[in-house]
Amino acid sequence: MPSQILKSLTLAVSLLAVPFSLYAKNNVVVVATGGTIAGAGASSTNSATYTAAKVPVNALLDAVPQIQNLANVTGVQALQIASESITDKELLSLARQVNDLLKKPDVNGVVITHGTDTLEETAFFLNLVIHSDKPIVVVGSMRPSTALSADGPLNLYSAVALAADESARGKGTLVMMNDDIFAARDVTKGINIHTNAFVSQWGALGTLVEGKPYWFRQSVKRHNKSSEFNIEDIKGDALPSVQIVYGSGNMLPDAYLAYAKAGVKAIVNAGTGNGSVAGYLVPTLNQLQQQGVQIIRSSRVPQGFVLRNAEQPDDKYGWVVAHDFNPQKAKLLAALALTKGKDAKEIQRIFWEY
Ligand code: ASP
Image (cartoon, rainbow, N blue to C red; front, top):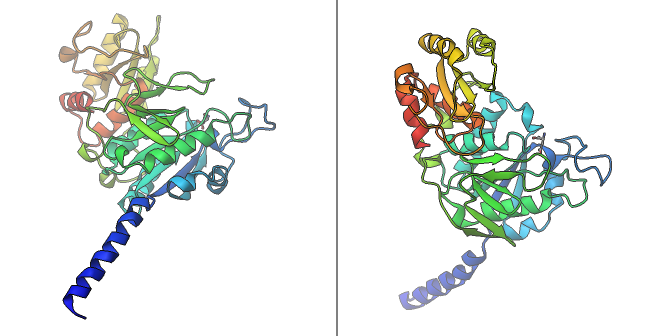
């Protein structure tokens, strides 16, 4: 064939390929873990009384056929559990599954359907240990699938739209709830009875309307590809043990001592105000710190952040402050930091950077 004809043919084929690529849909995998989004109640008026983790992933996807217009969506049933029952074992196994999926060249994004109780923990963990720029979107619902005005279907539709959208790449693990797009690091469940359950004191990153994300800010903290933690480096099915002690007036030292005796590697103090430790507890915490149990000062106050060396001399005591991380997020970050070492200064650096 003369080369001129061959050139024209090649040009025609590539011109045809352009519109095709414009319309080719991304491939999104929905990884289901249970929770209320997969919950079922006895009647449609049961919005709060129901059993979580009942509906299988295929039924969840079939209930929202519109998602197939957004992406080629397939489902994987990773767990079928209420999220309050998730332990390190399930968390690590889920992270490994998500990591494996995202490494596949034909997977463009992942949605994780999850119970809302510990959704913020799983999202934050994925934000820290998955080295991928592809969108990772965690979603749940406050009403079970069988309820009147169930919020799961639209949340799922929005989550798939977000995971399929190129603009979501590299923005860190995202939480999609009630039309809002949040950063995993600072989102938290702020109310346990309404559909606008998730909040961040720093605001949402964006909002999603009719399948289209609109962005307004971006996290400046390390996440995913820029994280020093990697699920591929973590062996076994447990993280270093970290527990939380809740601060209040008139405390006993017993909870701290019992956790230390049980072998925890760090205790997060969900302290009053600026993460404060009562004067009469300071000797106990210092004794534990000298025995090698790291003391992380977080706060029971949902907003603001713990200031280092302000009311309490953290440098002198060798304590760590959790910065703006709430106690449950501080617990996970401390556990990951402890996979690398137990130097309090190094753990503090990690708390500033993530
Ligand atoms: N307890 C449920 C869970 O976290 C609550 C929910 O999903 O909203 O699995």
